[in-house]
Length: 116
Length: 113
Image (cartoon, rainbow over all chains, first blue to last red; front, side, top):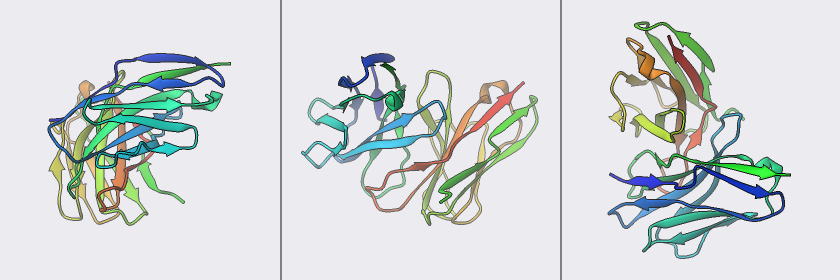
């Protein structure tokens, strides 16, 4: 079974600064997908960014980017120019590839605080 | 622009009562999922349905049953609710193509006294 570990229960950053959230995972599979989801106080689960393991290029979505290190099984999220609206819980998630309907395996989350 | 709709949004039950959580998606997705989220935890998979007519157990299926009523709807039933099932429940769906992400409903907060 796969496991996902987020070692930072809480992170704090000044508005407009850059912050990096860490995620490591354990798997014996070679093909899989990784995701970062944002959960604001409204409880919605919002997809931030995704990475396909077979792609070497790191995914980027506007101010959000990842550092995907497949050999190290590491998948960190970098948020540039932090905004107050970025305050939320952030969850790293893993899903097997291969055409099945497997669900996501989540980490326990990192609570991100934005200081004005 | 509904996406994934869960009903109800909140519910309080007494121990031993039964309850069905409803989920419907209007995105023509093939696969549907039920997760639970407990304080300090990420979401954990309860059951999933790869396609209409099929269901499979996830990580924490005990105490739950599911029904994939049709392509749109996937319900979660608690036959005899227990306080340990107090949680926030999320339904999600996904298109069959491998690289497609899951889309989540807004969750149901369920309290069992």
